[in-house]
Structures are given as structure tokens and as C-alpha cells.
Length: 279
Image (cartoon, one colour):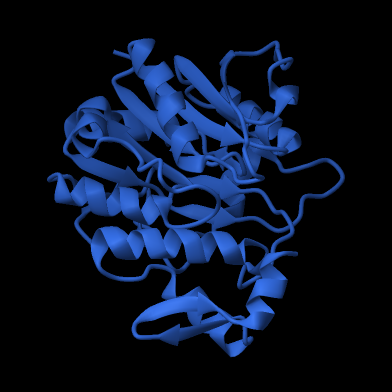
């Protein structure tokens, strides 16, 4: 039995290296599979300390990142290596010292559960970067998700609260869920779809207090106007698959900005939205 940490990356080389350093300080996984989406810089990366990255390359077509396909490809490589536990960690996330072991123990105890851990959004790093040996002192989990205390496990809850920043699943559960739907390209909804698929396949949501992750700061916007076209495309796909729109909080914000409008239950770009979507 072995554990694989899976991450996907495009243009976040500094964050990827910091993540690797955080994994090296804790219980390092046996496998570290990195799916590089149109990012050749990752291929030439050979860190001295374990875990040694195994890089899977995927092309980027039309400027849209294949997030779902990249996770599936990296997971397939990890399974081929013999991993029985898959830990998915966003490239921006640093691993707390107990994250890998906590996920491994929980997934093996309950292979029918899709496990997520609390994530802290960090402020900008100083000149020396984040204190990788003192991440616990920065712990302040995001308030929009459950955050059990270390040592606690909570089962059940709303699948819509699942996010792909940090989660783990036993390979048995992964196979039951069938992976991510690769019809999603670009930003948004593929993780909500995965949670819906997993729970429909009989998996239970679970929140694991000991699996703490720490999201490195980067500039962003809220709502994410730069992803407007992706959100409309993927939201419409989710609507066809599940009968409802995801990400409605963002869609309402876009509506207030005059970028989208709702007609007969469907969200569409306005003329201003079409201009914004073209960048």
C-alpha cells in the first residue's frame, strides 16, 4: 500500500516548489505525481529531496486549462504506481505536517468516504517566504467550509461544499466515482460535478480535522471576471447534467455588474459580458 499526492500546475513554479518543500518536512508520500498543463518548466525540475516528482504532461488547447483531464491523468499514473490512497492538493497549497498521514489513515479506514481537510488562506509571504516549520501558527481555516479540530472526523454534509484544493479518496472510492468529467475545460464547476458524481455513486462526504493545508497568496479578483466565459460554459454543462446551475453566487455578482442576465432559467452573457469575456 502506498500514498500518492497529486497536483496539477500551469505557471505556478514557485508555489509548486514550496509545496514540495512542505511535503518533504512532514510524512512524505511514496509518490508525487504532477500534471503539467502546457508547462515545460516542470519537466526539467529535479529536486534533491524526496518526494521525487513524476511529471505527466498535458497540452493546452485554445487557452483553456484541462483541469479535470489533468487530475484524471495524474491519478491514473498514481494508480499505475500502486497507490491505494490518492491525495489531491492544489498547487497553491502547502501541506501541514500531518496532512498526508491523516488522509492515508482516514481513507484506509473508510474507503467509501470522500475526505476533505480545512484550508487556511495565507497573507502574502514575506521576503523569506512562509515558515514551513511553523505553519500551525498560521492556522485560520476558511469560514465557508467545515473545519473540525485536529483529531476529529465529521461525516456527511453538503456535497456543494466540496472543493478541490485539498481532498483524498481511497482508490476503491475513486473507481466508484469514475474520476472527473473531462467535458469541463477551463475554470469552474468540475469539482462540484465530481462531488455530485461521487455521492451519487454511494460515497459519503467527510471532513478531516488533522489534514490541514495552507493556501499560498496570489492575486485574484472576486468575482473572477477573468474566468467569466469558462464559468458560463461549465455552468451550462453542469445544468445539463444535474438540472441546476452551480456557482450562483458569482453569477448573481456578474448580473449586478451587467455582465450576465437570466432568462427562462438560463444565464447568458450580455453585450458588456461578451466584451469582458474577450478580455
